[in-house]
Length: 323
Image (cartoon, rainbow, N blue to C red; front, side, top):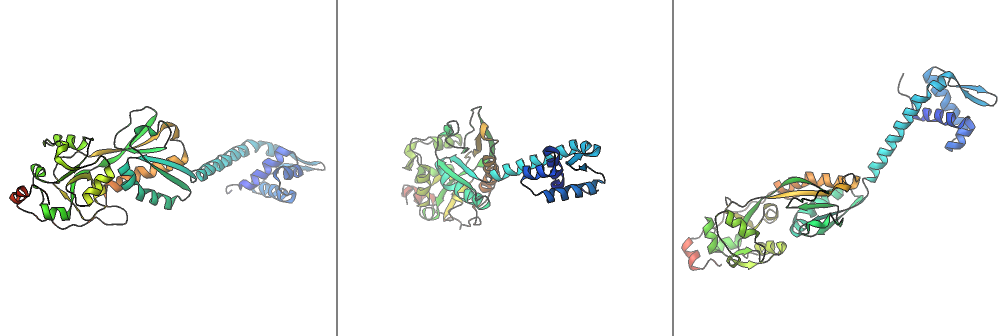
């Protein structure tokens, strides 16, 4: 015997609950002839009579009563399936707020959220550009992309990759000022760095190069402005490789410079991990961010740049390291 049609079983249960075919039709807003036909088809498939027809209506037979528990299980399974499908529909509609640093919000997330919304047009995404780690605790955002792991117990964090950082300069700048061959050569170049933020200085110190903010000819704590100064040819700056890959005119210098990579953490509030819409966005970012960090930006192959033009170190010293 093939699997039973749930429609037939549903009509059987309606009659069992209502006590008659006509009452079942009223309860289900169906038609009495349709329900009668369903009962006849079900009885034919089972090979037994489920109801005894009387002048006052129908009365369940012994077989009809015996079939009731299994039919209830089938009803429970059908209702569970309906709830699951409903949750799936709900998970394709809603709004999710993503918070990230200014540079991540500007250069990493836009291409990813566009990619996501093409696949999930019913989910609206909001980007909150902020360096404040406490956004999730105040429930000002649903998901956070951070370079530091939060230590609050109410947050769930997953490491999704590492952000490689390098020294970068515009090809025009290198053509004029030359390309440094050793870390010490950086002291003879126009450097772009932070003002009050000492992250670059600490990184250089770990690499054995003692520097102060006075070594930076151009200074800003705004990471987007810092990147734009590099693109404008202002000198040699320090930036994430995924960002630099967006600009074919940039070239990496001193690739062996020991600049530690930054861990990238995807964080969500513990209370939101069961939210279908938030979970869908979270899982997408967990897959898409590592892909984006490891390869060229979407829609463009990795940039091919010409070898830098080298100039004698002496000329660099005479020129004071300035173009």
